[in-house]
Length: 469
Image (cartoon, rainbow, N blue to C red):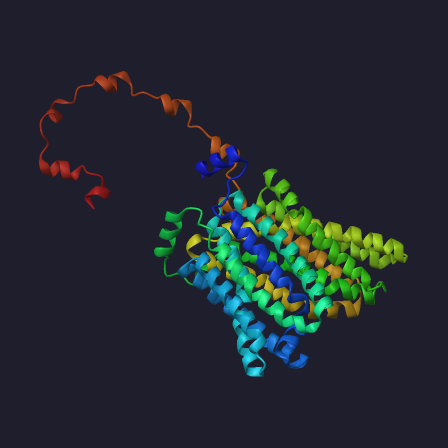
C-alpha cells in the first residue's frame, strides 16, 4: 500500500490499467439501458407485438427470477473472477436484445426476457466486484463516482436518443433500437475486456486458492450485515424521487405533474455534471468512508424534513416550485456524497476470496428496498402526505448513526480510502534504529563450558519448540 500511495502522490491519483476503456464501456452500456428502461412496457410491446398485460406479467415474473439469481452470480464471481463474469453478462444482454424482435410468441418472449433479466439483475453485483478487482484505495472511490456520473449521463442520453428516433420514424423504430441496444452491450463488453486487475499475481493467487466458503461466511460477519442493514435504510431514500415524489406532488401538494419532470431533469443534470467533482472533493478531504456516507444520509434526512415543512405550509405555486427544486438539490448532494463512499466501503469491507457473495448480499438491500417502496409509500401516503417523509427522515438518520457506530468494527482498509498519514509515515523509535549491543556483549568470550562442542542431544533440546516440531 505504501507503493500505491507513492504512485498516487506523484501523479495525483493512481490510475487503473484500462480505466478509460472501462468507463467508456460503462457509458455506452448506460446509453443502451436508457434507450429502453423509461419505455420498457411500450418498448417490449412494440418489439414483440404482445399485449401490455402479458408483457407486464412476464417482466414481473422474470424480474423476480433475476433477484433469486443474484446469490449465484456472487458465487460465480468468487469462483471465476469478476471480469470474466462481467463479460459473460454483457454477452447475454447483447444476445437477448438481438433476439427480442424475433420473440413474437409468449413462450419465446418469456425465454428471452428470463435470459436478459438474469443478466440485468446480477449486473450491479458483478460490476461492483469488478471495481474491487481492478482498483485499490482511493481509486475505488473515484471509479464509483465516475461510474455513477456516466450512468446518469448515459441513461439520459439514451432516453433523448430514442425519443428523437421515435419522433422521426414512429414506433416501428423500436425494433431497430433493440438491435442498437445489442450492439451497445457488445461494444461495452469489448471495451471492458481491456481492463486489467490491479495486481495480476495477487488476483490470480486469490482466485486459484479460494477457500470453500459459502454464504455462511457472510452471515457470520455481523459488521458487514450491519452495513447492509444501514444501506437498506438509505436505499429507501433512493427510491423516493422515482416512487414517492410524483405521488406526493399530485395528491398532497396538488402541484402540476410537470414539476416531476423538472425534478428528474435537475437530479440527472447534477449527477452527471458535478458528481465526479463532489466525490473528488470528499475524497481529497481525507474523510473516512463511514463518515462521508453518514453525511450523505444526513443530507437525505434534511431533504426529507424539508418536504414535511413544505407539506405543512403548502405555499403558492411559485414558492412550491422554488422550494421543491431547492429540496431536490439537497437530496442530490446527499446522493453524490453517499453513493461513492458507501459503494467503496462495501467493496473494501468484503474479503477478496468471497467478495462476490458479500456484494450479492449487500446489493439485496437495494433490491429489497426497491420492492418494498411502492407499497410502503402508498400505504403511508394514504394516512398523511407527510408521514412517508417522516419515516424516511428517521430511516436516513438511523442509517447515519449506524454507519458511525460500525466504524470501529469494520476493517481499517475499508473505513479509510488510504492509510492514515501517521500510519504511513510512522518511523521506528530512534533508540530502536540506532541501538547497539553493549560493548561487553560484543567482546565477551564464550563461557568455558560452551567453548567445546555440545553433545548432540543437548543441542537438539535447545532448539525452539517450533523447530523441534
